[in-house]
Image 1 (tube, rainbow, N blue to C red):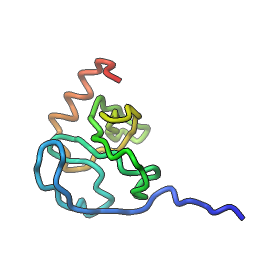
Image 2 (image 1 turned 120 degrees about the vertical axis):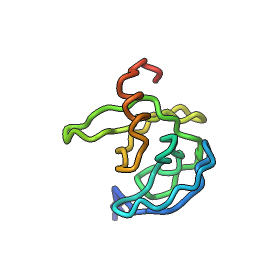
Image 3 (image 1 turned 135 degrees about the horizontal axis):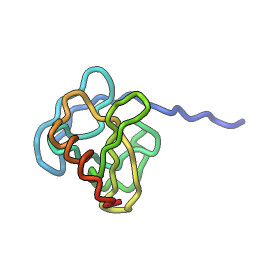
Image 4 (image 1 turned 30 degrees about the vertical axis):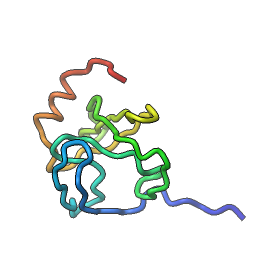
Length: 109
C-alpha cells in the first residue's frame, strides 16, 4: 500500500532570520517561509512545511516573477546545495526589495 504525502503542511512559526538577525513574527494567514526584511529563507522543506530537508542551507533571493494571479513569487538559490526553490511573497515583505529583484533580472541563477 502506497502512502500519500501531503503537498502542504501549515507551519506558521516565528523565527530569527539567519541572514539579517531580525526577529520574524508569524504571518497569520498562511505559513511564514521567509524573512520579510531581507527576503532570505532556509532550505528546510522537501514538501512545503514538512521540515524533512537535510540541507538546512540559506536560500538567497535571486529574482522575483509574477505568477498567473499577478502575485510576486520569489526565486531562491540555496547557498549550500544550489537547488532552486520558489515561494510566494508575503503581504508584509519589503516592497522595495521585491521591486529591485523584479527589475534587476540579471540571470544570477
